[in-house]
Length: 80
Image (cartoon, rainbow, N blue to C red; front, side, top):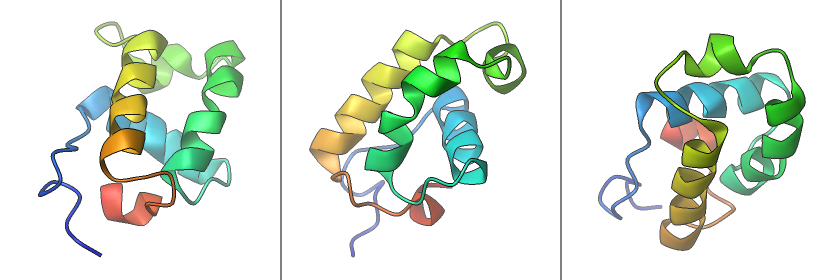
């Protein structure tokens, strides 16, 4: 597998924190992490994970770009 950053997907710190959250919740791929965004948005973890500068909508846009760029089967361990 090629390096994800060579493909043009370089998650921001907020997106990377959300990927970590998804990984801790059991996700193993970018597609699974994306599918968990609705659950994340309803959780009490949003302020702790994203802080004040990032939004769930912004993370969703980054994940969508990642899905198009590196694909849904990209392992989270390669992105973290």
